[in-house]
Image (cartoon, rainbow, N blue to C red):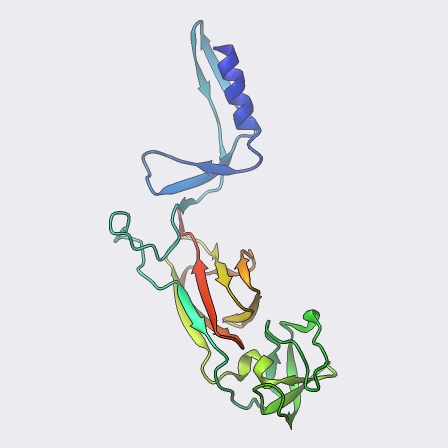
Length: 236
């Protein structure tokens, strides 16, 4: 008995941070919890009662990501049937006004004249100082941005798109959650007044979160791109 109690206690203590904790009475959900101490053992010769106190994240988390519409697990009280993927392409461009602000997208590679754009410039939003004609790439215009020496092609500016790809994601949980993005090309996502730059592969950035309720996103790219979103609802 003591040997089994020792094994269980050490297993719980050495869990390396919060782990998934499942409650059989709440199917389809889990908690994140860990044991930091506070265990008590009541011995009764051949048996005993081990009482364990868990330190837990306060919200329960859905086991499957949003957009899963399997009938048997769908809850009509708080689940949402929604599309979790989108496609994006270069699209067409509009002229931006001098004095307005523009953001260099994740897909930017070269200035007008083919000098390489430093990755540190990506995501930078700056005032437009002037506009010049160009024939480089798919662009007709190149922009002089405040604080940047090279001219930025319109195809590399997030705000230049006439019709960016739009998708609405609904977080019907109780708290904002991180949103995972999988894409095969570089993209920029506009949410509110913030531009998020996403690179090929699967991105799990705690900075890119979905607010509770409706989240309107705009996506821009320069290549035909497939994008998938995944997030897990959290409730009290």
